[in-house]
Amino acid sequence: MNTVATDVQVDQAVAYLGDAARTFLAQIHDGTLTISDVRGVHDIADEYMHRLRELARSTGAALDASPAYNANITNWRAVARLAGSAIKETNKAG
Image (cartoon, rainbow, N blue to C red; front, side):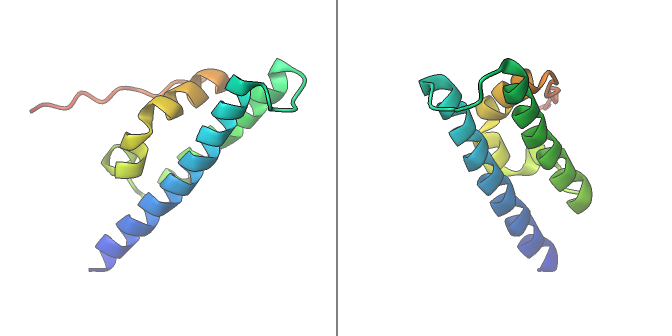
């Protein structure tokens, strides 16, 4: 039962971080982000990716098992592109 509770907590943390990342992307898109240079956008995107990786690392959670991560994979890919990193595809048999 403890594992299920932990999984729910990790998923909620991923959802919260995903909401913040989605807001960041929306601000870039609609021009309301007040960062004046591309490097600033890169740094913010990199920080989101760092937080996501650190969350997965510290909890031992597999992001591809998180419903919140999978529901927002397009946003995470966009953030990764802005950060200059990439999200690797996992080949799911089935």
